[in-house]
Length: 266
Image (cartoon, rainbow, N blue to C red; front, side, top):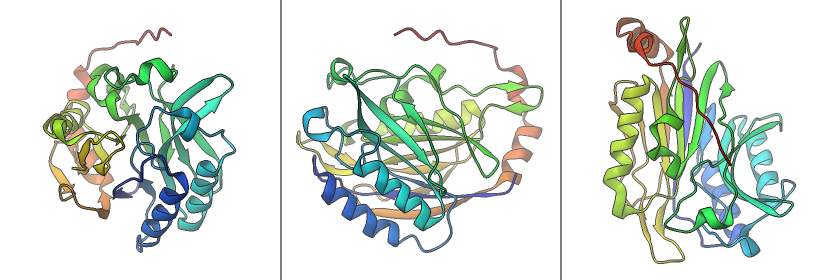
């Protein structure tokens, strides 16, 4: 496994204005000059966190997915982002991991935020996802999922870890920024994994302020990069495969993790 370069984009989102957001991200993606293996965008990058499917939902052949496909090819990088997707009568907060060749995998948000009534409008996901990006096993979760350590829990079996990098894409409000930062650190330490959290900034359509506080942490919980709070930021970080292996081999917590299964009920 070689080192992995990831890029994070922390920025404001235009409320329920897909075209405006796509144009905005096209400009920001052009600012990523150095090669990157994986680019991370905030939750619902094209609309902001809206529970208004009449305005924001699109199908899997819509403009948002086509944008990710075009940009992944152009940047020669995987891109992870979530969109509000309509399938039949159901709506999903769906993460798409788009590969440079146009193939993709998806993950539907499992834990739907009760305070915003997301759970009343969207359908929850039923399975986890681990994506292979250049030999790295990457486990994506979406915003509120971060509060559920069992859903984020890494595994260890005969020398193999379930994942090497936990990614969380979010629209996490500034009023709970301390929780966001604390949980990112906790997930890194308890799972002996790199963690990358990408969050938006600015007000949403409900007047809720987001400070961003995007960050990348190593498996010890050390901060490798933290975005300036409330400011737009684009950063590319190198994740050391050697450092991860040395730490895991020297501090073998994974060998003592409890074995478990998750029962998923609709």
